[in-house]
Image 1 (cartoon, rainbow, N blue to C red):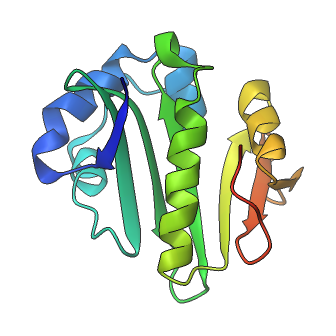
Image 2: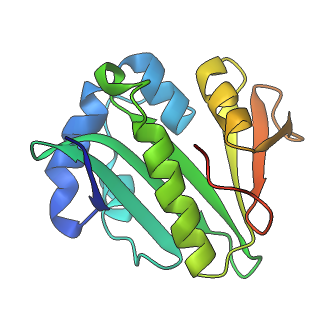
Image 3: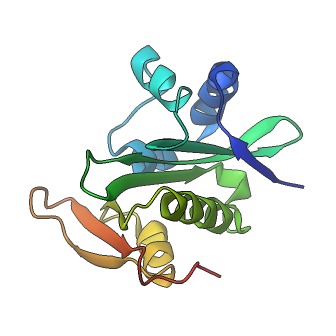
Length: 160
């Protein structure tokens, strides 16, 4: 059974273990650059969300993080940048959809109007997932390796 809960300050070691356990391809897809593990500043940032302007969630099975999702508000624009990752062995089991639904609900509660994100063009599964969830996809204006995904929260339905 998978439970969703907020990431907490005490989750540093568990989140680092989650990231280390991702395949190199999954780490690249999540962080857009090759990483082996999270740097101390990134680990701190991910585990110290205010759960308003920075929401971070964990999908947990038997006290092990098997997925994470977050968004960070982009100033006072009414927009936030989101990101998701699911452990390789747990992909295609609905965890990403559950994380995205929870992020959308939290973003709406705090009055955000849109979620956006950058997705590597070679990350076909995430591009397809985003399209099914109602994100508008377009070429990234500043990086030919990326696609830009945008979801209007004022009009979007929650993904199934």
